[in-house]
Amino acid sequence: MFIVLAIFLNKILTITLVGVLLGYIMIQVSSNIAVGAYQPLYADILKEDERGRGTGIGGIFRLLGSAMGYGITGFLIDTKYRSYVLILIAIVVIITASLTANTIKKSDVIIKQTRPGIGKLFMDMFNLKHGRKDYIYVVLGSFMVFSGVIGLSFFELYFFKFILGYSNPAYYVSIIGIAVLMTSALASFIFGILSDRIGRRKILVYVTVIGGIAMILIPEFEKFDFFLILGSIIGMSYGIFMSVSNALASDMAPVGESGKFMGYYNMATGGASTLSPLIYGLILYFARSYSVGFRYVFYIAGIFFFIGFAMFYKILKD
Image 1 (cartoon, helix red, strand yellow):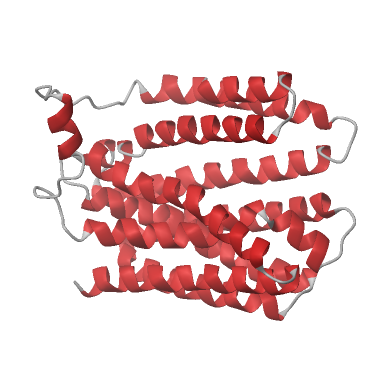
Image 2 (image 1 turned 45 degrees about the vertical axis):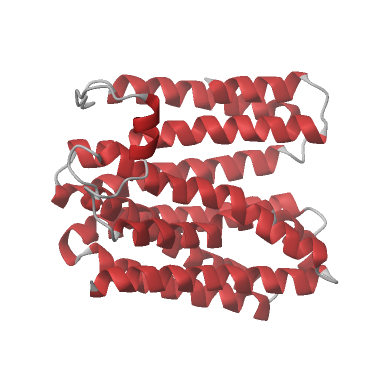
């Protein structure tokens, strides 16, 4: 409901940079709290050989929702109905939040523990003594790969406008968004299920390499067709990574501490959402031209993928 409040405030208040920033912060904080609350359910409720299927199903709905968001808002934003976009988003959030809350409460697992003081609770948040030390590589690797993808969505409109030269970039962004996210959703579902049978670590190692190569190749082919093909490959890699890394993080979370450890994993996605747009924005700001800036942006995104590959390769070998 905090998300709806942020949308409502952005709707009624005069549009300013401070207002948009405040609304964005409110939405990010509330959505990350919600994600942090439901992610441990994969570890709490599902058996280890069911988690890939569970995260794959979750991934397909999450990505299909994103595809619908891209498509609907992308088409409406250039029409006279653009003022209704935020209202539509608020309605969808209310409906889906109600359905999710009423579904989860039937299967939620509550672990009763003694309540420590605030100081001890805060210190225990970062205590890995009773957990797996290599969990840090899952978190860092996920942060890198998510940083390679999430931050780019903030600048797609400018890429289509200034690099590909389209006068109505929102239309083409919506087309790309739908195609990429549909591919991503299908791959998330299929490989989430396969990871229960063939292993998660090997899948993560391969998809990070494929995504990194596709990302680095984008600046070499500044045409819509090539962007669609390479973007779909990146979307496929991202979809697979999202579901399989989530399942692996659930597998590695110690029993009774799934909330804390999945919270670490959630820091990877939340941190990537926060830092990667800033990194890419600074690159574009200081570059001598958009052409050079976007080339560096995609190279850096590719490097993020390869660093993620190194993290998961270490986990595979260990």
